[in-house]
Image (cartoon, rainbow, N blue to C red; front, side, top):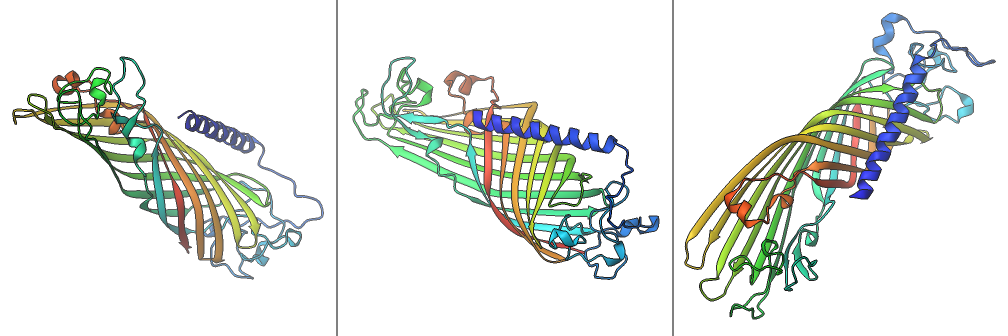
Amino acid sequence: MGSFGGLFKLSLGMLAFWIMLAGSVMSQDAVQMPPPNRPVCPAPASDNLSNLSPAGATRGENVPPLALSPQCWPPPCCASESYDPTRSCCPEKNDLFLVPPRLGLYVEADGVALRRNPTRGVDFAATEVLPTGSTPGNIVLSTRDFNYDFAGAGHILIGRTFDECFQLEGAYTAVGESENIAAVRDSSPNALGGTGNLFSPFGGFGANPIAGLDYNNFAEIHYISSLQTGELNIRRQLPMPPEKLSASIIFGVRYVGMPEDFYYDTQSDVPTPHGAINSIHVATTNQLIGPQIGARFEFYAENHWWVNFEMKAAVMNNRADQSTTYHNVDSQGLAHDFSGSEEENHTSFAGELDLTFVYRWSPHFSTRLGYQALWLTGMALAPDNLNTNIDILTQGPAQLNHSGGILYHGPFAGLVVGW
């Protein structure tokens, strides 16, 4: 958990630095003198601002260079009437794309494989009787036993370029259900004259065993989780000279929804009156919304080919809730049901990093390949909200634990179509 917190703080620090840099540059006098011995592009007419950076410009069209405007950029080094979107306007730059391809309207679609990793595990069965206060030495069932395989996800982004400085982007990502099951059996003789020495967290993993909850011969946990996130951002290009590196800052709002279900089932097969069946279901929901900031750095390695690195950070209100149902069948065969729920609003944090390799095949079509990571803190995870105090579980009041953290990471591939 400490490593994720450190990475989050580092990302926030980098974002703050670039935002201060942008503010410093924008606060300076916009009038800049062109370099000596270089031609100066004429300023575009005011009625042509809506046609800046067209994707389909060809040699000879009278349009300004991509992402360059006298309003917020230094003068380019070539005349607008000689603009060619597939070549650099500076011969000494080896025909590199020196600025991003800024299409008027564009759609980005990716297929994603994401793996979820909670920042800590929760234990649910041990096979040793330990003194009170001891740390369990033989945990045999835990959320650490889950494989957390990659789940399929889809990402779509729709963007609109308004001028040489601003773009509006809306994005949505949905991650399919991640489902994990782990179970354990034990048939060794126990102290109650039956079989099974699986001890639960209710009795401190054998430190203070409770008949009917401990001395189990079977225990199973089942974890289901999914995720969806949406964003609406304004992207502002930073005023930088036409070189291999360009940058933009992001301001927007983000939403995250993460529902989860956790099931805990045990059976004990010992002489009456100690045998029992216990089934607990915990359902949690996290609904986060709040402002976010970010930055993107685009490095142009070769003609048509560049690398993007993007980072975002968000501070959000999390409307979290949990509901727990406990079904118990005692040694007499009588069923008992208990339930409780709790809801709270609190602050959560989100951070995202994306590394993307982009190849532009034509002015209208590009392909993307990369890796991304999204981490969330202040989350009410379902396993954390299974209360192991049997009195609170059966009598209340219900409690909400929102101290969990989660990391989603994985590769993605997709395309960008624009016009």
